[in-house]
Length: 191
Image: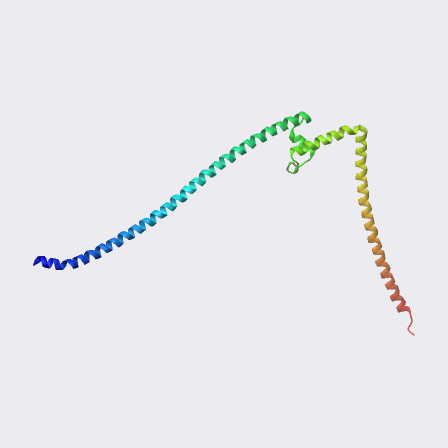
């Protein structure tokens, strides 16, 4: 009978076990879902960090390449400066600073070297083809042009002064005529 009693209690025990197992299964599924979410987040974080590492490596490579390019340009500029200093010393027997002072130029607004070289060559050729007499005539021409510009400025000043004087005289004439009319009206007897 005991077996029968045990058999009759079996459905209740099984129902209790089912509830316990269902709850355990739900808890296990919840832990599994949380673990999957953590894994997904960790994978995304890993991808982001891998991308950041790749970007950093690329940026470092670009920076090294840029630095090497700048160092090469800097070296070329130093060599160009040394060559220019030597040439200036050879041609002017002075330093670049002394040449700059005699030229009275601002280095920041100067044309590039190739344009300056071409202009110097052109001017030297023109100077050599002029000869001494033509150089003196050119100096005289520049002096005369300067004098002409000064005289033109004085003429403009005088013209403006004459215009103002005429305007003043015209104003005085109008005032005089007005005063004369007023006097003649006052002195005329009313009949």
